[in-house]
Image 1 (tube, helix red, strand yellow):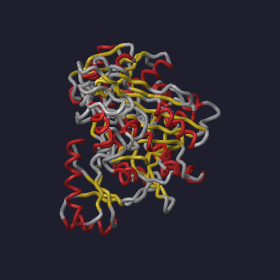
Image 2: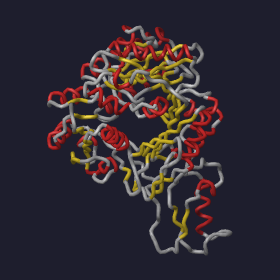
Image 3: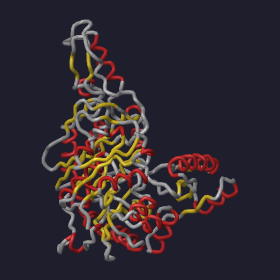
Length: 524
């Protein structure tokens, strides 16, 4: 048993874990870098420990600094959240070697499936379908031609030791294979310190479906149904929902059973996710990978089940049995939940990440809507970390009702100081393809590419200029105009600047610019 939990993370997931700790009467302990000294996750904890400079390598990715923080704070357990070191077997080993409880799967589970090729072998052993694949041993033309001969085209080149969609390169022609291998290897070395690659037959027009799994320390493994995550850009998820709207009851049962079988094969403990590609043309699913942590999109599962996955993680780590945690009636989904990820980025300008101070934040506070936020008014979005600000989750009895409520919640959302993707998310809620679920993992890139609805368009600039020179109904000549937001809130860009720029205030020409962080392209 443990009482004090070190949360080895930041942002909204650290806030989320702190809330789960309080449900069980546990003491949440935050860690923070120099850039996060006043961050919301620090304020959400009972105690906070400084762990180093702003770059993640010197703070959130430093095993030594995190263990030192645990020692100094008297923590008895460590929750890694997601990202950073959450799937690092060395960190899990080090936590347990220090006599602390690791709130996650044992290091042996992480190590056994950390490589995508090793995970495929586990899937085959568990009887879980996999897409045809081959290891890439070199960029030799003869070797690459042999792979194409065996698998066919198109292919996807993937890092064996990576995740999150990083380093994935599509190959449509043999003469482009070598270049894709070089590009993937370069990203893999930088992101995962490994350039091992493999090629996998590409399932075109695929749907991304993932199964939530849970395992306890007594050998019980179960699934908690599935989520749909096909609304992505550049392999990064944008919106998620549960349940998947296109699966028949038999297909749902089969894919959930496959996820549970994979988790059982590795002796999984804790909360994890088994991901699949689903081919609507053949109605077949193929194993993709397993994430040995809590997923960003876990709230949609919690919302339809009425079940707290993060609290379950803590109870499993304390040795409780799943049968006691879940209860005698088991898990039964109800209704539909849809989640939108709010990012500090400009979709109209290639999704360039934004940094700056949030002058004003208003998250929606409406029925049937949940907000998991990592930022409030006055907080600073740093160039050093991922620019996700919050997740907005809406529940409905039907999918249309959930999407209507999500759109309404986005209309209630205001973020001043940095550009956000809220206009794009609102547009997605009303898009005919989203409403009918006629989409796939590359649909968003094909429809909008690098210029999705956002704030940085010509109509916005023209409206500002007209106001500045005193157009009809505008200020007098020479008056100062301050844009209170680089784009704030809800409405999708329609081409009407008065829809897009409704958060303007007119000044007397004597003050600062009011521009909050626009144009800063700091890497997340």
